Length: 93
Image (cartoon, rainbow, N blue to C red):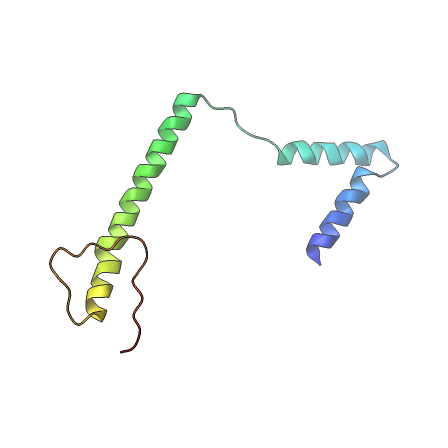
């Protein structure tokens, strides 16, 4: 329902007889499409930092949350258990 109202308002602004309302539509459209131009080197550095941080967080969750939780649920696990991806599914008791 809200999406319909937003679409109707957008259509009303876009095709309004008054030029000021159409100008407002164009201004809002430009605000929505705004992007910051950054150098390629900065983008690569930000991507590398994001991937490194993501890897650290994933490893932290695996080491301190997922693996101990799995070991607590399982009756027996082998040495050097390495869980990757999602938590394994148990069926039964």
